[in-house]
Amino acid sequence: MKLSGSQREIVLSKGKKRIRVLVTVKESSSLKAPVNGTMINHIKESLSSEVLLEYEDAKNLIYKGEGLRTGFEETEGIYKYFRF
Image (cartoon, rainbow, N blue to C red; front, side, top):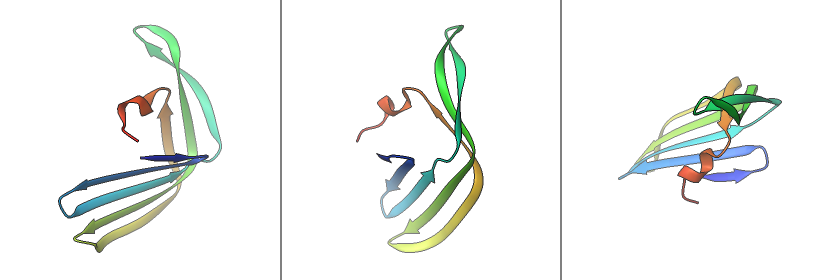
């Protein structure tokens, strides 16, 4: 996983298969969300982000697609579950 300004990149791989997701966050709003019944968590929500998705098998590109004006939510503290 890579974080850089408004971009988020996630790469998942198993054996020779690989999925890459690149999100460019645009125009986000902050929402409150519950944690154990108390509204203390924050979520950034965007309805106009861009997403690039690539799927490879043995370095052969099987699928590549791009989504414009896609929804994206980013929960406060989510990145503690990832290794950088």
